[in-house]
Length: 482
Ligand code: BG6
Image (cartoon, rainbow, N blue to C red; front, side):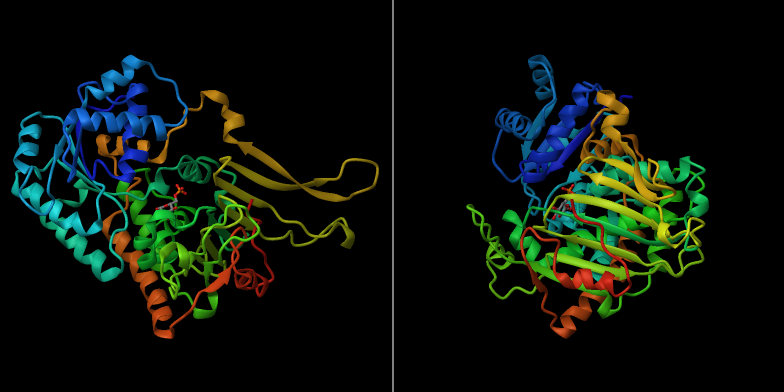
């Protein structure tokens, strides 16, 4: 379904995110017929470029990061016809009059994407207002990181609120745009099967793993000040936790969903120091192409920033009291794999005798790669050998189940189209972000107060063994990272 014609201004329009995600994503939506031909995309950045030069950059970005999808020369040409560029100085006055001129009286949906350093968010909001572009219908899209603690997030919310209403602010967490993340809600609230069992009485524990094989790459400067807790846990993992644990919202509508997520965050127990493990990756050895250690990659030989976190927490409410939630994320691990695993309790009694053992169902929701949902069920082992039980997967791989017809939509594409539709369901509300910081702040402060040094782990491993110990102590184990 096409959205209404829009003008999207991308501040930071020459930057990495614009080139990798935003521009190729917009082009894919254009080819899919979702971005109306009257729309415009306006790159705005410090770089001195004209629109023709910017269009060349856009073509390059589509070629390099567009993925393999087919389009015609005409489609590309038409899309480029919708692209403009204007140099701008976020901190000064240069370029603002030109942008104002470009945006004048078009009567379309107007959105401004802040794909810039967070230090500039407030400045941009202020300038938009100064130059008469912050009217009631304008929308702003704000990238992460949204603050680095509760105080800075609160200040940023307050600054943005000076110029924009909450329903104009779209705080991006791109995990919410991932197909399976939305499927999680469909599975939970579109089936009768799961919800009656979705509580501490039937669920032993829940694991959330977001494992990456990449290291910090060229983002060392940012990352070393952030670490995995701020970069991944405070946003992506907590959002997944909210969706898996929240009460059923009355409607799939922005505030109904966000109210329920907020309640989960507010019910989270503080994390005890012995329930959290931080790690930092070592160099990869035995590989021809030697990959640097974390400390080498960020150029800080004594860095104490974590590239891995594993933790245990509880949600103190009626539904979840007693069910632990284990969260884990890290860079340079053995595989790229994001998965939520719901481990049900064992059957209370085995009617098949001691030998058959007690079994349990495991529901795994795989975000990437190979998106899909698998339910482990127990059946009789085929053959004449008597009543022997085995666990087999009931598998629903989305690619297989839905075939080639299932349209692959990247998280950013979906989210940008939601901005244009004015749908905030998959965006974080200001109070949610602050609540998430209120939970993570004491953890980070604890590390600082104790001068905590992250445990080294081998690149290509599953993280430091202490993370396994965290599980073993509870008589449980992590799902293998594959
Ligand atoms: C980003 C983090 O938000 O998410 C990165 O800043 C991380 O450090 C990335 O690599 C992971 O996203 P995805 O979609 O590749 O899982």
